[in-house]
Length: 425
Image 1 (cartoon, rainbow, N blue to C red):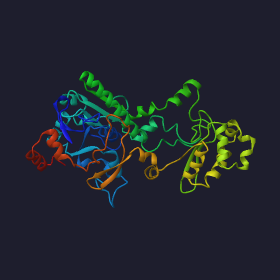
Image 2: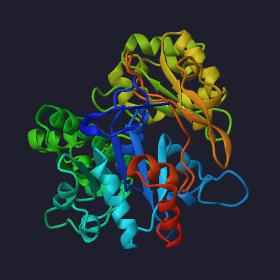
Image 3: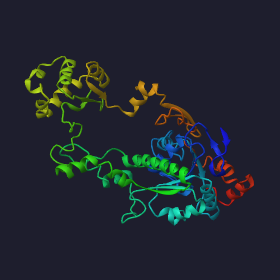
Image 4: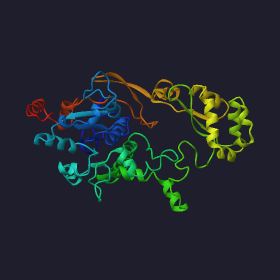
């Protein structure tokens, strides 16, 4: 790794072919939303420096799954998944000397990212007006439930809470049953991606004008903008989203076609998704099932007839799929020209998916505590300036001395002095 010059006269380790080479991120993030954002930046070459404190360790560091018999600060699979390509500095920011070190790191950074509730950084003396005094060109990205102004700014949320308050939970689930949500912490991950995009726009603005700015990312608002179809349906047609037959579960609703759903296969909790878009595709399904006698009934011949008898149709198809493994049924249907795909588990994507292997998706990085570990690849793939995996997730405080030397310019004697005074903890 080379040391090279960068805008504004600072020097950091950089991979010169990556789009964010030369950009430094001071990372105050924790849990999921913020680390998702900074993970994207690190994947494309930014020097991401996590600021951590032993008395308030990111709880995801202790999260499962773990490698080994008992959790440590460094063996959480979840933490290691979401924090690769970053460095960790352990600082007591409540100590005046620790706070001064933080300000020096900010002064040598391009971006600050945090995902606390709205007043935390202000209480520390590190809100945007104060950051501008430290570094006039800083881009400060805050990710919170409701944003940093407005009636609800002080409320604390989690990803699933933001999803519900943004309306997404209401629009999901099976007909006639309570809302189900969109999966684990959907709005945490989504807010992280949206924040990364916003940072790219702010960097472009700074490149043109020299101005930094504050990015105020509300997770709830990030969910609201994903409700377009439901809002349009009510605005234009006067129809509420939750009505008879809606939400549709696995069934298609626009256009309404049948069969369209997930069907059980042999094995524990194994399913196959099938989508039939027209009568010709239905005939292909019938042939793939070896033309069972029940399929000759005229009520199945048209899409309208299949929709009118959709419950019975789903039960019939399930009788057939449940006699086969999911992959075997998929291959039979796909060979007949039918849209069918296995509802894969994470293990399927890792062990059985030749597409991901062909795309060079899995990579091994050597972690300081748990050893060689496989990580998923970088998305998206850029032809001329691709992202890359340079380092596993950091152990707690793994890079403290390294960063204090390189970024802050401290000598070994000064580092030892700070350590003796309880600053590096």
